[in-house]
Length: 276
Ligand SMILES: [Zn+2]
Image (cartoon, rainbow, N blue to C red; front, side, top):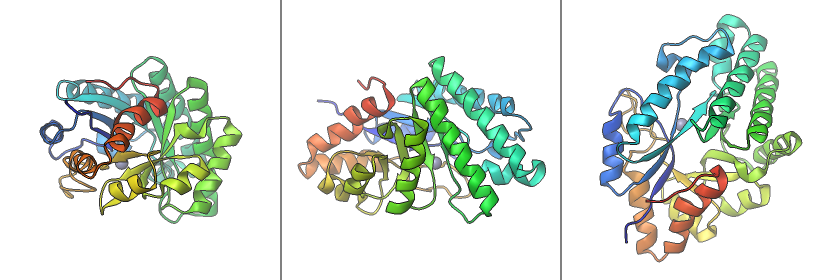
């Protein structure tokens, strides 16, 4: 029986590009969610939300090529760091406005069936009170857009803390989005705590995390956050990592968990069909 193995969060940038996906496939990977990167990586310096169209279209072309290697789905990101990148030139308030518009545009692409999710969040580094407040507003707007479109939101946020995630869950609830559609990217294997909070963890597949997560339950996804950056070739984890870790689950008798995290959970969170 051929197994389905899904990496929930990977990028392709300027290092291996499609070769990374060949490595993923050759290691047993079958499905991947490819996430677009921050604007400077595309040589784009957005002055309005619609300028993200160039980024999204570029990303969608890449995902189309990726589909010749594995089954690939697009996630359109308005990375929380954009507030800093754009803010230095345009002011933070204006940047937040651009980011909200870009999220609406991403939502339209999802409605057209071109992407399966949008990505938002809030900075993982220290920012001023003003930027933090604006970032939370942008994230809330992402929840509202996703709720209207009926899609999931991947979140890039500060490091995990129960309190921080509870706070995000509260913002999501207020926006009316189902918490299982809010995916915390780069999550630790705190499967039970995430279940209590309601957000859906996408566990970063290093350091024995996948097995630790499986010991706690099956309500999670797995990812490498492979960045494909020449200057950091293996970061965050290499493209073969998820296939290796999922195979390990099968070997350790966690076959049912493996099936859940690679198929059922992906289908449930994103509303897509995962099959060979
Ligand atoms: Zn990422």
